[in-house]
Image 1 (cartoon, protein in one colour):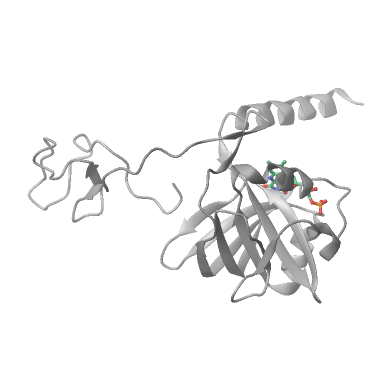
Image 2: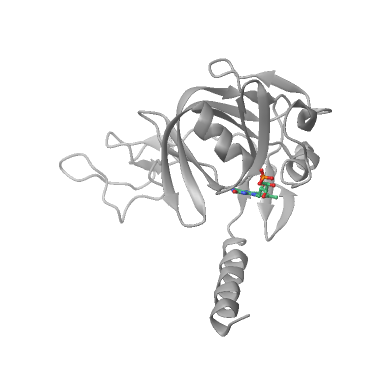
Length: 219
Ligand SMILES: Cc1cc2nc3c(=O)[nH]c(=O)nc-3n(C[C@H](O)[C@H](O)[C@H](O)COP(=O)(O)O)c2cc1C
């Protein structure tokens, strides 16, 4: 093995370790060709746009689900609950079969628009038509147009952090965020003035005065 190869491997390991500190949810992407379904665990899921509704997943070249999505032009994403750790591991195992056998023992539903399989005990689903596939190094960046989405079962989300599965109990429901006319979240107070937030003459909040996040499709 050449020195260059070793250093490239070390760099990849460092990248993997560093990225592992970014806690994510876990999802299973499903697609089918000629009624032969495939599913695969991912954590590269993120929403991209609200209008139009777009999301992305990054799929390694050579994965069965990528080839299936490219052929069928459709896929679905099921967001997993903490109780679905076993499924997360199963749909990430190389030894799982292709086809319905891979879903034996996993309760499923049919996604309303594309007919892709959904994992019934998940928290939420996104039923997508393929919008675009962009190259991204050793992965393809697959963008889906959301044709339908919704909630499945109430529960705690499955989280992947530091290379391990964990949980993340959502906090008790809080009062909704207060949004300014520009769409910037000001605070959880009942009014902007009560929170000490002032606005510029054109009605937009000064960035130094806002206390919370700018609404974002993804987070
Ligand atoms: C928590 C977790 C998240 C994963 N996320 C992704 C991902 O976003 N993209 C990807 O290509 N593989 C991801 N994988 C790996 C694939 O699930 C795994 O390599 C799978 O076997 C690929 O399908 P294949 O057998 O058809 O190649 C993830 C694995 C785990 C355990």
